[in-house]
Amino acid sequence: MAHNDTIARFTRGPERESDGLPESITLQGETFPTPDLETIGAWVTGFFGWSYAQRLEAVDGCELFEADATCCHGAPSWLRALELI
Image (cartoon, rainbow, N blue to C red; front, side):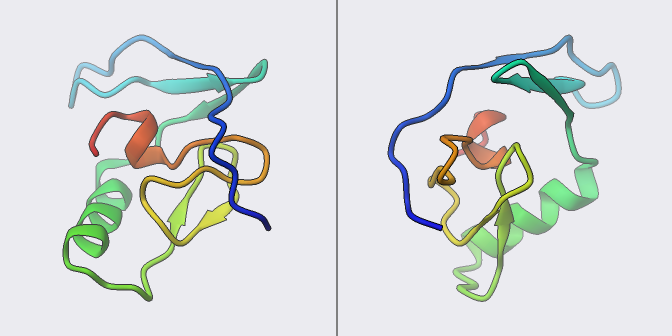
């Protein structure tokens, strides 16, 4: 998949009481549930630990290799959409 610098418009759902993150992200009319904290933590650890083998996930499920990237559909990484980077 080609790298795309255009971020598709997305909206954040209501915040979860447990951690303050949105329950979901809606991207191009489709709603995606926010991953659990364990998954997000693994992405953050991989990103800040400079583990180039670490793969991230875009909001729409595409695989990314850079935390600040977007997929070919314009979906940002979860870390970017959740404003963690």
